Amino acid sequence: MFRHLFRLIWNRKRTNVLLLSEIFFSFVVLFGVATIFIGIGTNYVLPRGFAHEQVWRLNIAAGQGEKMPRPQLDDVLRQVRALPGVQDLTLTSQNTPFRFITMNSDFVAGKNKAVDVDRYDADDHYAATMGLQLKEGRWFQPSDDAATHRAAVITRNMRETLFGTQPAIGQLVRQDPRFEQGPQEAFQVVGVVEDVRPHGDFDGRAPSMWMRLQPHDTTSWEGAAVLVRVAPGQGAELQQKIVHTVAGVTRKWSTQVYALEADRLDKLKITVAPLAALAVVGLFLIVNVALGLFGVLWYNINQRRAEVGLRRALGATGSRISAQFLSEMLVLTTLGVALGLLLAAQFPLLQAFDVPTNVYLLGMLIATGLIFLLTAVCAWQPSRLAARIQPAVALREE
Image (cartoon, rainbow, N blue to C red; front, top):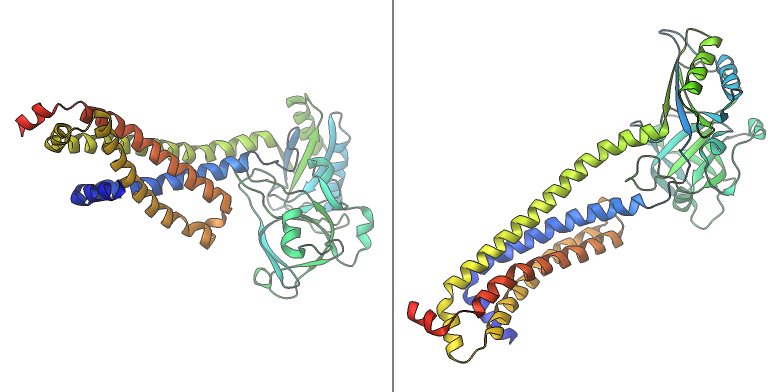
């Protein structure tokens, strides 16, 4: 049976090569689209690792040409923390969650290296303000003032990369020399927190490291980023109080207040636009492939009316004629998908684009199922038309 089908396909190889190419390229595109959407869908359902709801971001900036002495900044933070409706606040670096600002470095511990680590400056209140989930050790505390090395807290995935199954608490981590010239500062790991996804709803878990801000640092800044956790139901009235409080300490500073939820939605809008365009392209491809397959099969049947009439005259039933055309298309589809799988298998083997293997495998499975379903649907109606051809009419036309 299969030998007969392959002979029929080979006899019409010029036409079938075009069909085979169409199926192959359609599979490759569907595999790519499916892999992307599976990847972002998997990331979307992952826990975020922190609680951004009811958290506001304060951008405090000194006047033009002015500096921001740390004692004066600490006075501002104490007064804001004392406001009714403010539950806690933390001083941190500018790369707060969901912003289009990133600070990345590579860090080494012994012979192991963690690449593209998100680095943050944070004070002793950051974990409580952001709701980080501590897995090992502790967060920063006043006793770290006397420590020899600056305290640091890392995420679980960074811990696994640098230390594996070995203890991480108390170990030293240094920045990769290519990021910093001269002696590298050593950071002592005091805690490990659950993995976080600070970049957006569709981004994966990012290895992260928080480095303690020294409370008695005399460095003067030009600006400060402050995260404030507020009680539920707080709104514009509290925002105005915060702005007036900062202005009451020094009128040379300006303050802007944003909700982290608004930052998340802003980033989501920008991220969704290309994904929607990709979905439209994928849908357009499926429709075009369906129309192309349907048209080619219709044309093939019209070209093979004499063959169908002869088979019917020799005793072939309509159902067998229909099954033959369906079988030919399924064999062609199998060949095209096999070539596509051969190409797609290179991505997990080469660990391309830092995508998990299971995402690639699921993308292959979905693309294969869609191609076979599409082919079967497109071949069904033309095969039914072939089954209705009357032998006398077909042979008389020939």
